[in-house]
Structures are given as structure tokens and as C-alpha cells.
Length: 29
Image 1 (cartoon, rainbow, N blue to C red):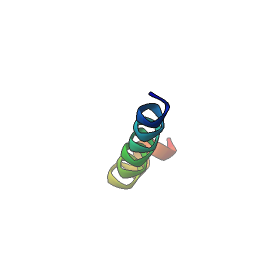
Image 2: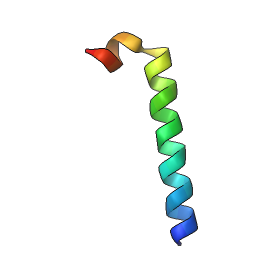
Image 3: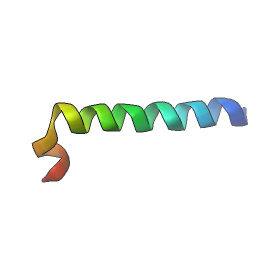
């Protein structure tokens, strides 16, 4: 379970980073 949660946490973090690169204005403002 802990491993699955950790993986999900990292996955969400990566998605957020991708979103920041895709929509820099949205992320900054």
C-alpha cells in the first residue's frame, strides 16, 4: 500500500510539473 501511495504521489507531482510547463501562465498566476 505504501509503495502504491508513494508512486501515486510522484506521479501527481510529475503531472503538476508537466502542467506548469504546458501552461506557465496558469501555474504562475
